Length: 406
Figure (cartoon, rainbow, N blue to C red):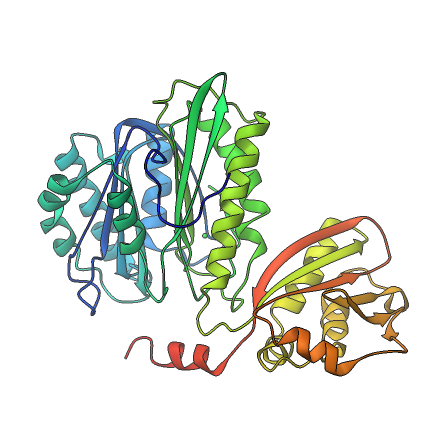
């Protein structure tokens, strides 16, 4: 059972404590430094952005995971500054925070995982983060309220926290999985092993790092790698999964119950990110079927999702289905236009590549006035399919991003 609002009592995975404090990076003065601490070193797996420009904390975090053998005790996340395109000084800043956190919490630097989100190209005032560590240590707590504070402090242009949790049973033991995410713009994750969107997942299952990595990769591919708001892939995208082992329930990469629950949580968080997109008035689920391959179905979905013509049509509730055809045609997927069928919700609007004889434009427009809509394309070539979530593009998005750094 996936729950997505406030974290209910008893939902927190054992073995973790959380805190959030104000370091002074956000102009708003709101909490901007979120920290999670595992009581003992937790198994860890992470996936990072496919962007070749990677922020300093991603480079440092990847190195630390490698050197620690997939073990992490401290997660240190600052919001308000991306610490990206900051050169060697940015790397030193990330390392300095890790060194100070390791000393504060009695671990090694390699067991500290840093993350940052915010404006790119601005030096990180890491001294402000380090100065708050005594307060972080004092306020750490294993409570739903502390986790909610963690989930809120990582936000930037988001309007609300994004949380999902599940409880499953493994060999008679309760296993809890809990996740928090941030992201509202610069969202088109292309996460690769070894993704601005930040996601932190915690479980008290006992999982070896290699198995954890396999579980994470499978879940991410069908969730975070299936969303887009604006087509921009961030320099800071990160998904981190930690397993404390406190429940005593052992899980490997083949455990269907755990794998299913993790995938559902990732999908829930991914859809929450899309729903909170900057200036969004329409959330669109693209269902692409009949592709020559799954990869081709995904190509078509991405072409449609990233098309400014489609996104602006959705913003105006305009059923201009010809734009869907055009995007599919330049997607690079194998295609026979004469085989394409398209539906808006339950209404078929295109048959065998042409407008249906009884096309009801008014009905199609009315359907598109809803916030949540489904568009289905059958390419008629094979069994390839995918589901992809995206948004419209509004003037509010332009205003938010035109004024972001000023």
